[in-house]
Image: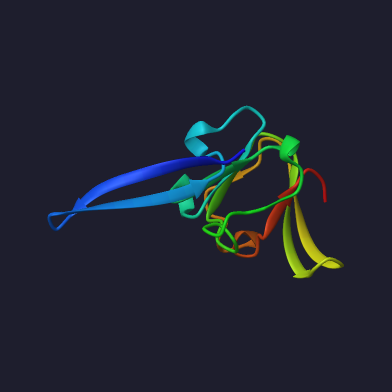
Length: 116
């Protein structure tokens, strides 16, 4: 499911509208979601995935740029080396979390799936 948020701001007397498309931001996380943030300590752009969604490529803001995550279910982080036959994976278990993940596999994540 894709949710769309619209941000409005006033810059130098003019009005600027920006549209940000994100699937389930962390603020709207449901039980069983795995949530990822672009920054460390659960800050920055966020996105949540649920095993019921199946395989999903992460949004551009998080592609090779996951700074932290929290897992409410089991899943698999995927780094595609050569699509579709060569990948590197990291199993994620319910309850896993990392405050700092951009110094590890977070800088490689391309997709998430229910199993590796």
